[in-house]
Length: 137
Image (cartoon, rainbow, N blue to C red; front, top):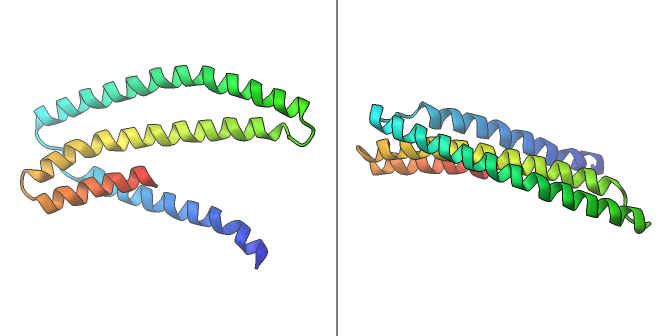
């Protein structure tokens, strides 16, 4: 039973990722509006990704600095492993990946929510919550 509990978080993470893919597919199938709406949404999308890229360039220096500090701690404190540096770097990479995916779906969801709100507020709520679900997972 204890060995099974080790695999439970991994299984739940995979299940969550699969649900996220399905929910993302549903959101992306929703109508994105007319040409002008799509054009504006594309500009917002490009701007958001440009912002993230600039932010990630700055964060790279922070991650390097903290990694060096953690390596120093691992060197001087016997009870600390060098694996803490690897764990920190992987955490930073996965956090950046999650932020990137979240920004992409958020910008794609916004225009679809706006289009859905033109005809049905309950549908707009479903679309917006669908996009939020993808970001949250």
